[in-house]
Length: 193
Image 1 (cartoon, rainbow, N blue to C red):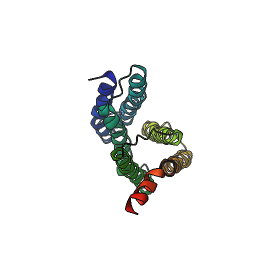
Image 2: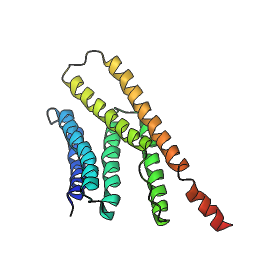
Image 3: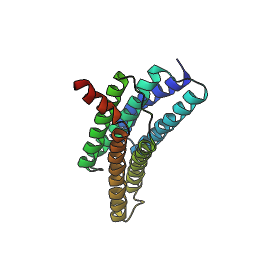
Image 4: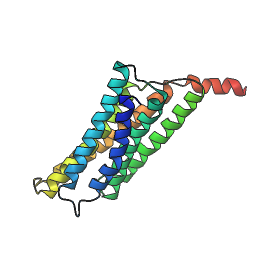
């Protein structure tokens, strides 16, 4: 197994640990801080496995399948936990999850047609916006629990802006992803005719 694939598996193993910490604020001191640390480590492994895979020619079919799956497991787990804790808008999270299902299905269809679709710039911006959003909420919760945030109103405004920016980039990346690959749908139409 390659180093890149080991990092991907490590990221998947971090997801249950992240979930444990984020949901254990009632009995684990500084649980949001621990969740934040685990989330950041997992996010860094996401960058590292891609860099290592490309630099050392460790790109494998296993990695192509597992890497995006690991990313989705981490982000969706984080967002669902934040909904459970009433820290993020449920409609925003539903939009993000629907986008992930849609693009995963689209990727599977493209793969069946032996078309490899590389991640675009908007997709990368989408991922970064999701990571920033989760990190901001975790930091804010740790500071609120430590009574270091006095003006919760400012936090709420920043939270609102970050969440809906995340949704905007999520939707735009999906539209761009499908628009850039409309030729796949043209092939379906021609086949049916």
